[in-house]
Length: 57
Image (cartoon, rainbow, N blue to C red; front, side):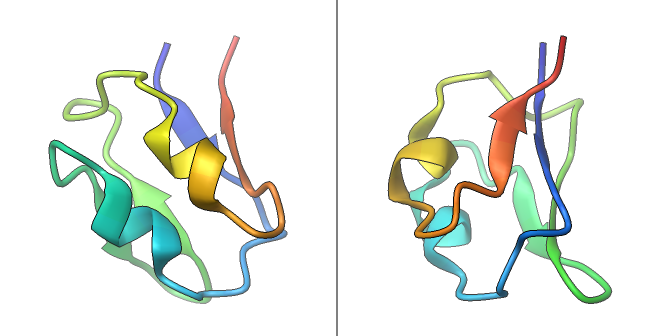
């Protein structure tokens, strides 16, 4: 399943630069992950300082 970024996002941009497939873009008040592009690698979750990205069940 694709990852999703929660409201905990602080807009630091760490996840966007880490995504190997370019699935993360700046959204309205938080970054967003395109579920069609996401390969569920977990790279975004590993670099987020607040734990905003998580895999959806």
